Length: 234
Image 1 (cartoon, rainbow, N blue to C red):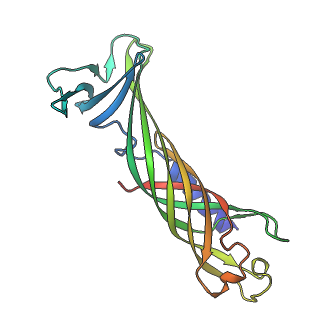
Image 2: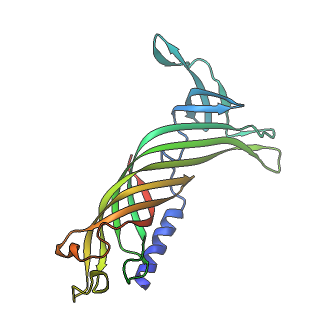
Image 3: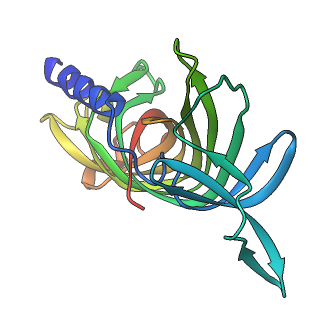
């Protein structure tokens, strides 16, 4: 039990720690949908030398062309005035993640009460992702305002992978005498929420035992709910 708690604590600390921003969490060069003062338009974001610029996208001869000669908005790293103005940028993408599911809640089965399992599970996740970035300024005591970018992300998709589970007489109708760790094929749906560098997800899945005792395992193809953490692969 102490070993399981140590593994969970390590995963939580690793997931909550500050890491180097990736293209998913940082506002980088690219096409975005910008919403400002109630107006929504497609723009190209250019980040260079700590200055964020936006360029208008124009439709010319059935092609989207970036107007690089004019700057729609200009966001330096700091300004010498207080500003409450905010701009919202969003983009959509295909998401590929590696998920680890350290906690699984299994519902009660027959005479066995509900279980909270802490087995090792890993899966490849494919989903649809929406990222939103809020660009604004925070004032300090010297009447300077420093640029602040807050990132929100949400992804929904499917996962497929392998894990292990404790096989005992209790969860096999007393059909086995020797306890062991069985290998399971886990699959299901997951939703992932990201706020800046913190990412956590909720998963709903089923497990299939990959050995001869699958017919007596009480959790075979039964749904479970789990907490998932993701590592972005694209």
